[in-house]
View (cartoon, rainbow, N blue to C red):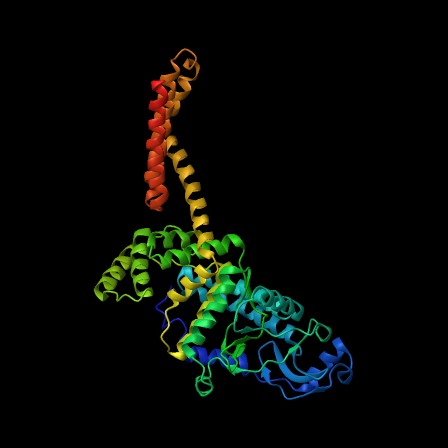
Length: 456
């Protein structure tokens, strides 16, 4: 969705990506003298736990910093939580909670809703990130889920040298994914690299219940054969099966160029504000899907739609629910990586391949049929409810069934049921043509059966 909801190029401009990389990779490191007591408090004396520790930090981020070491003849890295980081985070969150409500008074109500959702998700995530036992478990789960995936490497955790404040893992060096010069010198096919990165992250997202939500350039390296190495599993996203199937339905509707189903899926995901103008959203999505598939969009048509939208919609109808915040973050950052490489890349093709190879499309169709039939049943009930005379007639004639010929009763009941099914089908047809058509055919079959039974 991050590759589609906006106009691609302005989701994450290159300057923003560079600043993000600096934030993640170039945070000034605390001196090792302040870090060493944390290691020894959790593990005991340094010289008894490691053969050698290089006290020069090799990577520093906002919550922790990383050192290279030797353990049992193997190169490892030690990730140590920054001294006093809990207090710093607590103070920062307190400031954010004070500032955001004030600043949100000056923005669109929908953006306010999304910002609050992002803040709430950030607070939950940052607290998890400060416990390296959780990160260790996240890493192991994702590594197991993706173990059969080619050209993906995830480091192993060394459990007996890890704790809440320390995470020791095997050392896996590589070329930073945004280091275009080094990748070219190594002869890496960068177009295939971008495809591989998207396939890995979207397979995690659409197939499993846990996905890496922080694919910034400092967390992805490339080996000489083009394999990807993933680091830092502190920030992960979780989607329950129900939400994941809704997301799959959304992507399937994009692949099949169906704006009507796209709007329905977005609505089911909670991405649209109540009272939105469905007709305008569908028209806008139709143009977006066109561009998404590489078809040139008529500028005059876009201009006319924007003018119509401005006249009929008082505010932007999209919103970002909390449970999708990390998903949107992941897709946006990943797109920034793609923009760095400026290669020929069609996300829709990658998405379709993932869904076919992972057998995800079948799950989406099953879910759509379940939802459609649920709506179908409700629409039949609604069709009967809007004709109170029919119900009244049925009630009045309950006591007459014994005296009336069975054939007439069968015909009457069949006619009522067939009519209800037909009306329900016409209501449903606007959102799902196939199920609507099945319903209409069913109503004809019911009527035919009723007539046939009357004849006997």
